[in-house]
Length: 210
Length: 82
Image (tube, rainbow over all chains, first blue to last red; front, top):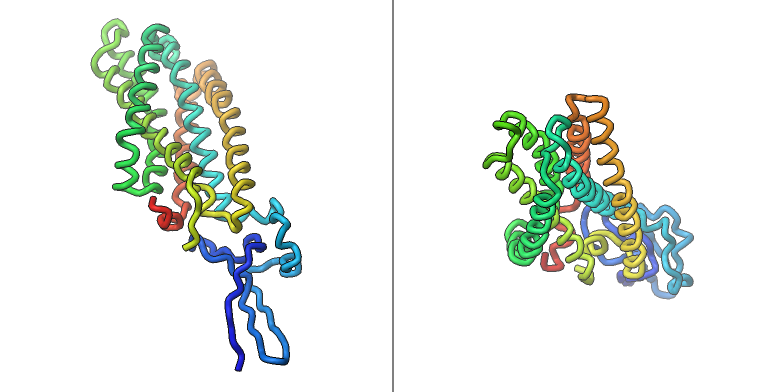
């Protein structure tokens, strides 16, 4: 009577991973033992190089190339895109704000730029403490991340709007509308930073095989 | 780990995946400000789309980012309590 058991091996690189299915136990294959006769080892169909994974190289870490599965690439790419957009907006804010109005800027003085950005730093830090856990609990991590990426569009769209308001205001002076737009911009940027909070939160967690 | 619990095949590749993510993100952090500021200067100097070309490019990059982020699995890491 053949008895079948699942062999859990930690050697395997991505063979045991079910795409899109999240964490799966790292199943190399089903080992079917037939009493007295022979042992048949089946590997899953997605195993591209079955000869590589043998119990001999249990101690060897998997090669770097084997980690480049689709989920890894998507996760790394989304993290990199968030980093790119966040740094772009952080670099654009002082540049555009100090540019004269006729060149598409806001013509803010260095003093007010410094005041705005430092106030933003303080308030954003508090917001990460207060809002981020509640937002994650309510909407889930993925939604917070997607919102973080989407808020970058708001940050970028605010620059021409602020400039437009200043062009049409009397003497190019700052008015209530432009302050509101600046506040909206900085608020979106702090939501964008919550996307990073998500990444860092996840970076400190240990995965639990489900 | 955000990166790792979603993705890595093996406990021991967590470190490598983490390092890969940080490397790629750092490269993007290097490129990002330089590209954005240069693009702003370019679009203002040449008056491309009235100087608003940089925002069009960056908002479409947000679209790319959303496209990638939408591919993230929805439930892969909920077991971690997230």
